[in-house]
Image (tube, rainbow, N blue to C red; front, side, top):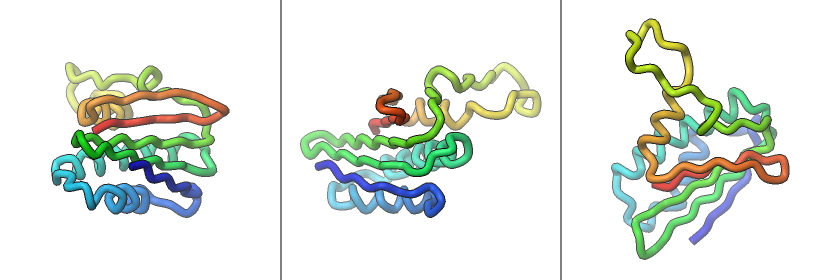
Length: 132
């Protein structure tokens, strides 16, 4: 099953997108752990798009595979090109917390919480997909 919805960035919050995703998967018996992972990842991805990309919209595509407990969510935006998998610095855990550079922890958490994370740029759009 595939469900898509477009959100205008001036009208949305991470919560509104998470509500859409949660509603889209509620009839598939998705575990609470998976919902929590989706929540953390969605909040981080949407916050980055809203705060840094200058996007006018975010298209969210939710795909649920019936035979495998897998959910894929793609976030497509028309913002500035940015590949967080390459361009976001990994946190330096060898440094004390108060000496670390700001940023990078959210992308790190998304990569750790998702089974698979991909980025592509197509037709002037960023496409960031997580599979949980």
